[in-house]
Amino acid sequence: MALWKRRRNRDEQPPRRPEYEVDHTVNSVWELILGLGAIAVKDGKPELAEDNFRQVMNSGDPDSAPIGAFNLGLLLDKRGELTEAQDAYRRGLESGHPEVAGMCGLNLSEVLRGLGDIEGALNCLRLVAATEHPDHAPRAAVNTAQIALEEGLPDVAERTFRQVVATEHPVESIRAAYHLSVLLLGNGDLAGAQEAATWVLNVDRNEFTAAAHFVIGEVSLKREDVAAAELSYSRALELGDEQIAALARNALRDLVG
Image 1 (tube, rainbow, N blue to C red):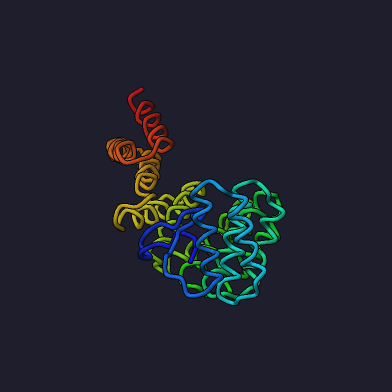
Image 2 (image 1 turned 45 degrees about the horizontal axis):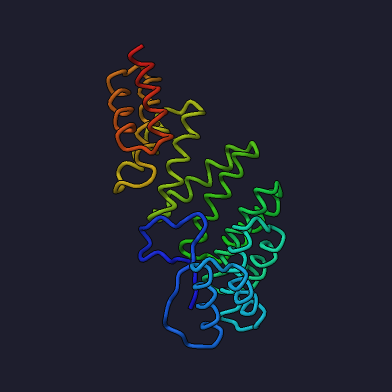
């Protein structure tokens, strides 16, 4: 059966755009066609993959059709054919499939958000949240909070981030805590920003570890604790990706200068 690439455990960070994966256990003809479609993607034959996924989507099979819709949406999304991708994702979202509906809703919301349809994106996220899926619902909540920030609603964003942090979801609570720390830092709430960033650092090393060190460096600098700021910036520089490392490097340069 062809599916998006599933995490082996819930502690792993889900990809922004899930990828294809082939499961060689086949229980129906539709699962076989899904598998052939996924192989076609890997072999660089997108037209064949599209035909296979579309067949499955239109099959009406309650288990496989939503997966076909998701995989078709993903394929079209990557090709920039956003109108057709929306249609496929929407069919998956409306299927009510316990796993696929939420993934389709999350991806559809990203497409709509990119096109400037904020209300449409928020509506998708509401539908995903309503599924109460243990992974998809908290991710939808974090995405909703980020949109609230973009729309000039920091109070709504803060409240939503805090709600997700309280869930202690192994992935989304960390993402929410980091974004909360940035929001509070911008609002001048240094104690709150440090608390949220420290929450991120108290979890095993994750994708936000370096950025959380940078936030604490900023908090320390605003408190005029140069030694603490230098230590945090140095950790951010050591652990961060190119973007965070550049910010930390500049901050350290400013301290010296």
